[in-house]
Length: 87
Image (cartoon, rainbow, N blue to C red; front, side, top):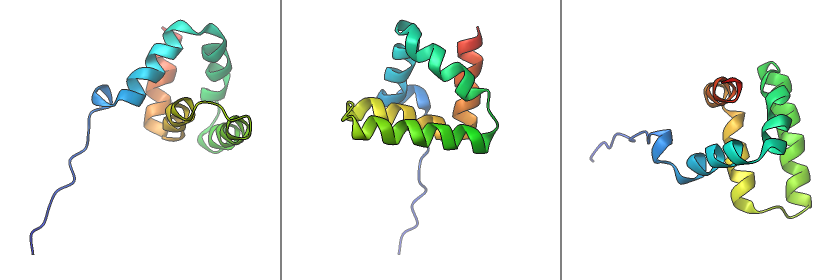
């Protein structure tokens, strides 16, 4: 039996993440909505984000946008995005 290492993809190679960065650069409304959300502690950020994601699903928002926002459930990614937004 062979053992395979799961290779971690770089975020920059992930099309959805790159698209999220583009949206944040172009859409001030989204950036302004995310900034306070990303400053919350992990639990509250995830709670607020999950609520927003559920609302988007109910409103039948584009699936790609929902996937992009779901990356922000990860603490490290959320922190990096906040650093970028603050610049």
